[in-house]
Structure formats: C-alpha cells, structure tokens
Length: 120
Image (tube, rainbow, N blue to C red; front, side, top):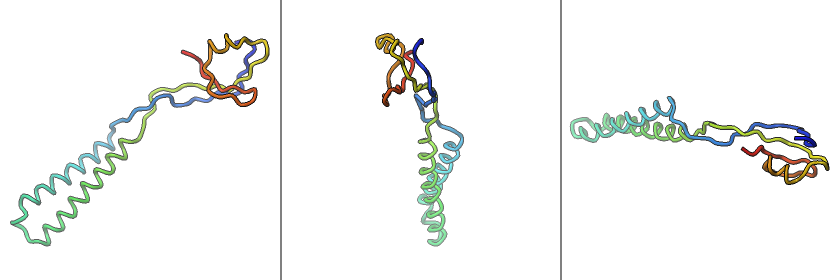
C-alpha cells in the first residue's frame, strides 16, 4: 500500500491444537499396564505372601501414577496448526485512514508505529 512502510514482520501462532503422539501412547500403555497389574494383584491377593503382594502393589501403583501424569503432560503440549504475520508499520500523511482500516487490523499503536495484521 502506498505510504505505508513496513519496519518489521513477525510470524505468530494463530491457532493451536492438542495432539496425541507416540509419547502419549507409550505413557498410556504404562498406565494401563499398571492398572491391570494392580487389579490382578487385588484379585489374587489371598494366594500370595503379604511382602510379595505389597511390592507388586507399590510397583503397579507407581506405574499407573507415572503413566497417568506423563499422559496428561504429553497431551497438554500444543501443536501449532496455523500462523499469522504481524507487521510493524508507519503510515505517512497521504494514507487514508479508511483505506488503511479496510486492509489491516490494528493490533496496537506505539507512537507512530502501528502493529497490524492483514485482513483475510
């Protein structure tokens, strides 16, 4: 646009999404194995000595806990899916404000420097 000078451009993340990935699958399997082991231990608890039962219960509970925590943490990681470009611009006196606003969304104003995005 005539009369508009671009000083800087920055690519920003416009939209993100949570994604299920291999790390989530592995930690979910650890959680499921821990839960399954814990349920099996409770089902056959009367047939084993107390010390063995306690050790396996602690191990299965730890597996379930770690699996649950890491599944949540890995799922919380956001994956960017779209980007926008923001420009820092200056406009001289020959630029019509209406024409400028038709082409750009103003994000912020710092003195005579405008941070804008192009309208889609």
